[in-house]
Image 1 (cartoon, helix red, strand yellow):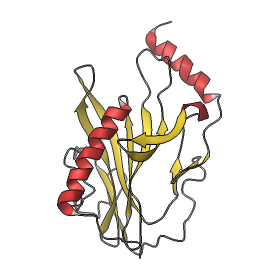
Image 2 (spheres, rainbow, N blue to C red; image 1 turned 45 degrees about the horizontal axis):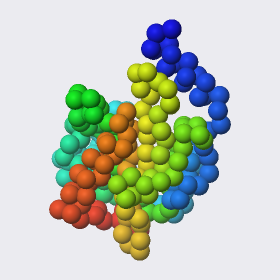
Image 3 (cartoon, helix red, strand yellow; image 1 turned 45 degrees about the vertical axis):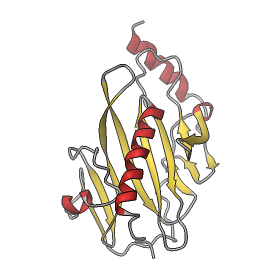
Length: 206
């Protein structure tokens, strides 16, 4: 059995395990059938978007000027959405150095929200899921599948960067990467600098 077959066999075994579900601190882990369930507390009268499958009604310059758009994100494949003129989600990739001296692409999504807990689509098995902290911030963490030779499958984390309070929005960061903790800390550091320079976005949710 070669490395790819070995990793795929472990992935198939992992799929037989129960998925993590329920509330983990500020996160509510749900399946794909529940993640888009309507939520009445967030109102958005005018929605605009940019990226694959979107009608490109959101200008790229508006996205890049948002506090959510950390400068390391690649503009290639970038996606974003806005609510009533405020960018509420930016999704892209960051090619960053890894621990082996090469580069790896981390998938990053930075999300504005008006309430907690946040409903997140969660695929990790229960035995690979933990609620802890990354760089001091509360995080729902899905560790990579153990024993894989090529580390074929990413780890994933949702990180509560800022809690919504009064008229101030909250910020959630989603990171998917092979070197999950290293990538997450780099994203947090960049976002801390960005928010320090620009401040939090206005709350679009009323």
